[in-house]
Image 1: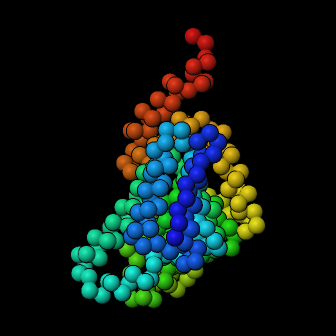
Image 2 (image 1 turned 60 degrees about the horizontal axis):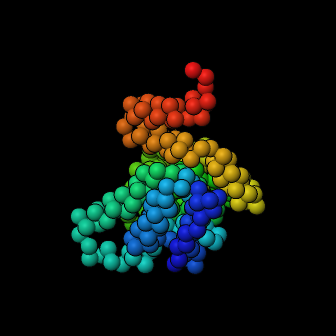
Image 3 (image 1 turned 30 degrees about the horizontal axis):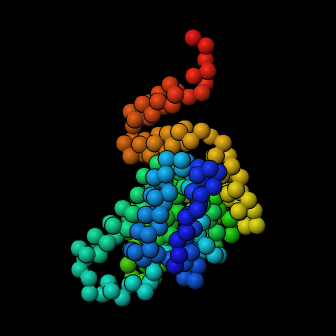
Length: 245
């Protein structure tokens, strides 16, 4: 597994590449935290206003590394629950980044991959992408991923997916709001390129402010912080600065 971080557009764009393609881009605790650390480091650069996350190979994410399951046999319920909470908190760190993350979603999105998908701010999916939740086949119920699905899709569809009885298509993911767009498989990289260019045309401070508005609104359920964030951009914005009087 390798993680590389590069930048472009005078530092405004950070490109983070996660390559565990030999194992379908699965994760364990260490690799998840390595990825989140890389994303946070990229976002900490004051020049950065956008992160492009690339998952190498044919699949977005094949879920949690099943080779770690054997260790669960001797773990207590409290230990397992703490580990599950820790992996969800790592995903929350992605959601709390001060800049948006754009990602191409192709191939399989399995198990934990659904959580990663939900943490990305602007995921663009290939038409051939498919989502599945095989946890029930291993004899356990999904935790954070189950919560994400239960909140994101209609109740009958949640049961259909979480029992492993169904696979979701890219068009379904779009309908449920889990991706922003679906394009032909061969057009995916170009579509992400276009989205990146569109976002980089927005003033950096404004793009960061939009993230603040969305995430504070979701976290609090109110517009209280959004008023102050918007006021800050209005007062500092070019339209106001250039207005007469």
